[in-house]
Amino acid sequence: MIRKGSARLSPRALRQIHGKLVVGGIATARLQPLRELLLSCVASFHGTMDYASKLFDGIPHPDLFMHNAMVRGYAHAGEPAAAFAVYRRMMEAARLRPDVFTFCYLLRACAGLQGSCAGSPVHGAVVKLGFLKDAYVRNALINMLAKCGDLRAACVLLDEVGEGDVVAWSAVISGHAARGDVDAARKMFDECRHKDIVCWNVMLSAYAKHGEMEKARELFDSAPKKDVVSWNTIITGHAGLVEDGPKFFYLMKDGYGIEPNARHYNSMVDMLGRAGLLDEAFAIASNMRCESSAVIWRTLLGACRTHGNMTLGKLAREKLLNMNEDASGDYVLLSGISASSGEWLGVETQRWSMDRKGIRKVAGYAQIDHKPAVFSAP
Image 1 (spheres, rainbow, N blue to C red):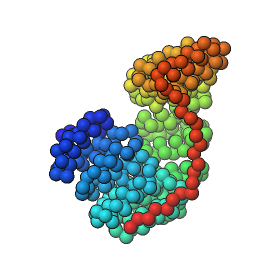
Image 2: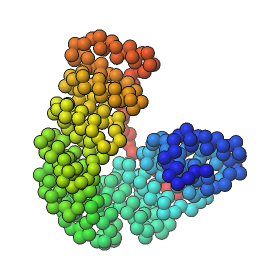
Image 3: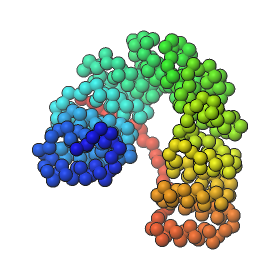
């Protein structure tokens, strides 16, 4: 029913498959098609778990694989409370024993929360059930502790791991950098004897994010190997330096033969757009060899709004329309370009177009962070 690579199926196709299962009797359906369908729904609905949740709730006796798929989906969607709810249901109602995958996904969910107290129950369950010996779970735990700011506990576990696990080292280096202690991150980086490309990129990103581009450049030049992430970091880090950014971009492309991806192109368009070099930005966006994205053209449209370039703004808007992108913000940006140029007829035209298509400007809102919740793990 669902072949390999089914995560690429459209939501409509997955709904049709679901419908056939319901008509045929989902209670009598074989487990494997249900597993594949649920996993595909988790992967295909662009970060929302609503449809996957409906499917999951309609399965009479979901197994461990299905529970893990839901925990994984909620962890990736940034919904830790829902991930824990599925975990409790698995332990209490279904009476299933968690496995390595369960804890890897749960710890990922905890990593998005501030304060290590939220992950303490999971840490305890990992130790209690004997999963701390598993390298994947242990690294996920170290990563969670580092991201939540409990670097002392992360370092204790790292000492037990030893020098060979570069994944654990990279997680703690990243944790120090996230707290703003770049010197501590560099000290650990220098102590790590088995650095891989990921470890180098973590340290490179730490310097770039904190604006220490001279040190980033030195590290970049001394790296034994560079990949797409390395180049993206150094190009993005030079976003405010119009002379250096394009130099690295073309050096990567022409000197090292690495084909730029969408993130590289977006960084270049954003960099040139901020500097008012809109013709150059438009040329780069138009000559992309990878698949164009709405983000790039929307970035250019925003730059046209800032610098009052109506001609390129309209071209960027046409590109978005050709991609079936019809967001209210695009009309507002183009209307702003007209207003800044005193072209009030253009402003009215954009508003009329919005009214004709039934598009309404999304109201602004403020998000308030609450005190992090503490979840219990049976």
